Length: 165
Length: 419
Image (cartoon, rainbow over all chains, first blue to last red; front, side, top):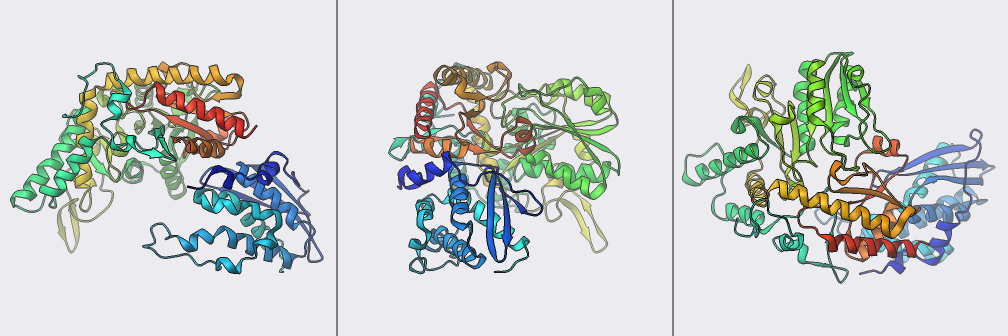
């Protein structure tokens, strides 16, 4: 059985207690997207400014558990000021890390079918920096949605911004 | 009941009854399990598990069909379970007024479908309360979108009680009042008999969601004065896959079928069909037979323990838990719902410091303590309370003070972890 220390790493608790980039950017001009986790009622608001193909600014609002809040905080720190192409790549890498377990476990109710996910070795965890601290979440399957909520919301925000990477 | 060790309505010793429930002897993360999520789904005693196994091993055949011995026995057991359940809730005509559904949600959908589509026109009013479970909200939203009916809401006060000051006004012109007997979040016991009288005075029928009340306190549909009432077997020591709709005989007789198929018909022709008599009119397809047998055994178990004893046990345990939590955590804990244990069922939703319920539940799990964290399928109520989610501990007859002590200690650990 994985221990709590796998889930609640020190970096995660730090970002939970002192979230980075908290608040909302003025919208418009910022793109504003809300995300919901129907499982636990968590709500997240991502506001972002895209300028010249760069994610110039991002802020996170809403409420949630330590995993969803720290993931959002870590995400904001990782993507702020980055070119959109890099942001998209980071999203793909992070979501890849979060779906490792799905490729190795039978999916619920799918008669043993497995979910398409990148091969574990294809994911460059080193490229994730501090975000790698969230790796332990995959050992707690019900919490994966907490960790990916902000990332899915950001993806929707990028799509809504109408600027393709 | 071979394994009920107390006489009916003798005081309950939770730890003794817990021995009747095999799952409660297992360990989680190296500790004895402390199961405090019976409001979501209860555990099953050996008597229920055995009844279903024996039926499956010796009697199973489809019901209402074959003329061979086991088919007749299966039918007899299935219909006996129906009558047994009906008697348990005081149904005046148990053999005709109890409809087996998939769960309480399906029972409530059945009402919205069969009653709603034949009794509601654009502009008609359905009254619900802010503390309803989504199962008693969404079917009415769906009907509102389809038929243009109006939904009105009875509000909830800061103590988690219904505000009934404007009841007459809210019910004015209403066709139906849908209300939970006991909130699955707050534990609040609603004054159903009073609401039934008010609804009938206004010319409305009353639908009661009894999922949380039937498993935990004596139920008498006639005394309550309701028209329709829904509950699920899996919250009352029975199996999943079967729920109950009880309805007054004349009302059920006036309703059209819900789902179409076998069993629910008297005759099918190329130009139409003739629906079957109640209750089978509402039971299209092969019903959950094994589960009905299990539900019947669950009712026998509850009856042998005695529902008055169950209620007394849970009031005492809820009072003990409320005191223990406040004593240990003071202002750091906020318990939602009425402050008096007698005004509520054994459901405790709480906020603990600023620790998110999901995180509380995660740490508690490490101590083998099972509590629910989330919105409990009651998002309008969550918005009223000003929270996204709560942690919820809920009790059943197999819990005792030791379970509460374990909860309090584990919560203390969660507080230290996130401080």
